[in-house]
Length: 281
Image (cartoon, rainbow, N blue to C red; front, side, top):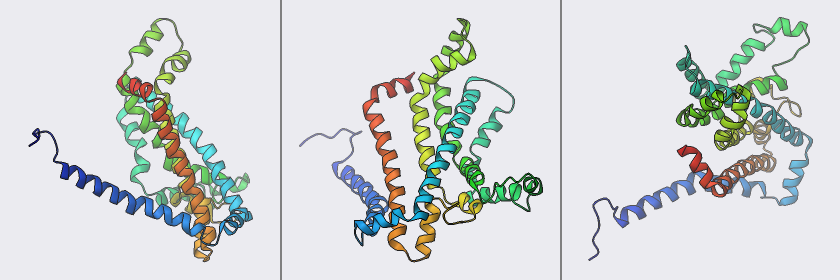
């Protein structure tokens, strides 16, 4: 009889846990995803293509990509600055700043949207001033961008803070002692060490920005063809019983999420040794 070591799991236990994991993934992830695509193609590819060509759908896709193109770089800059400050320097209020970064994780997106309405809406704190200056934030692109930035800004920072803290300050201090400026130290020392963590954070931030519903729903006004992003347009179509169109737009969102996952996996596979070396640094 083959000897089993005390630290070795029983084969039945491994098989059982694997079956449970595969079952949960299939039931809660793969099955709903397959349902989305099957419903989108239920009346044929031509019907799905027509749903994508519809003006409101094209407008929603453009707006979603535009909002992500604005919000993600802003969050990347903030994430780098915040993580660099927290990991590399000691200052009063450091713990408070770390807590503030986690704020969007603990506040409902709907509440964050209502906060922006309270501040920038016509009846809000700055409503009169904005109206006099002919500046429109709520029910317009700026409000959607602000809401998206708020709910997504922890992703890059939360990816970089542990990485930069683990790497320490030795290389930056050495570069400074050799006469490098702060900007040179960042470009040639800090940035190369965090590039993979930064890329992961950007991918996650982008995925959340394109799929955000709650906060954007509050500040957008649901104006078809103008302020509806893809998630909002899916809701409008579904409520109008246009199921093929709703699931077609939903499948586009799903494809974007899959592309994000594939890119992340490819990077991990292609640069596995370099990524591991960075985290061991």
